[in-house]
Length: 455
Image 1 (cartoon, rainbow, N blue to C red):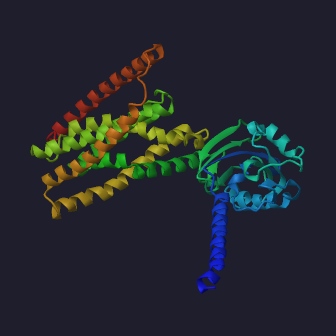
Image 2: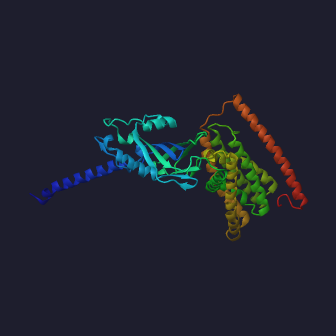
């Protein structure tokens, strides 16, 4: 017998072991895959000297917990209590912080924990959910696949008073690729406050004071303008040909007033609540960038570097109205965190946007001045930079326009015509206001001896 024949069985055994190991790794990885969509339902209710957190989480989100199973992945309910409490500690208690008057509450007591069927609908109200969690458990003889069920938990936190200011920070974004949470706060003797958010929303004040709402929305507006590429490109178009302080103040203020008007209109419901409206606004935002960039190119090519400030502030105001509707889409989902302070939140968001714009201008103005001084001549630089901006915005316009084209044209019914008439009336009022302000601005510039294009 040859040496090759002697080693053949060993090779077969090694290949079989490798195949088994690969299969085990693949099945283990599949068993611990992060779920794509996770839905969490929760109630927070302070009463007397304790606060109850009633929460429902899919067991599939708790992939790091080891639950006792039998057969093809059936949950062994008779031996699962300790593992379920361990999962509550690992996933809920360690990841959810509740504060009372800005002081974190101590670790809660696990008052109740139970497994529920995926078809259970008891979390539609606090009363039903509370009765369900306190009710009889599922029978131990049921064959339930562990990652297809729900975990219902009642946590009790000690508090000083149910009249305190409470806040919660749910760090649940790691539970799945897309985690959505429906949270309802039940203050004593007050109306239920409903929150709906995805991922980690940060610290959520359940009944915010005015300064808390203002601070949250100032921060939100600041980061929205700095993280919005389209808004920054439009701001760049405004700054490229005009970098002197006084014209910039006039133009940026006009843009600010414009987007503040549309932002307020959106917050109070004076805009179409239709699926086609957001893609229309996003397309128009891209159009405003293209038009502003083309104006820069044409002016520079014609020898007009500074531009006509009077005409430009009107354009900035009109385009600001369009951008304000874009701001409103980001603001609409976060107004739930304003509590009873809607106007404060709107003012704070606008203030944050303005601070963000000023921060961008502080960087852009000196950077452009250095660029035009040491890298390229001003006229040629304006043309090159504006052409790059126009190229980028043109592709945005085409992409967003194709999305808009998927929506059918609005039906010409009475409701649409009424909305159209209200919109036209608002446009007429704005045109009249612009005419008055423009006349005042021109007279002021003339009395000071300045030129229209160079105040």
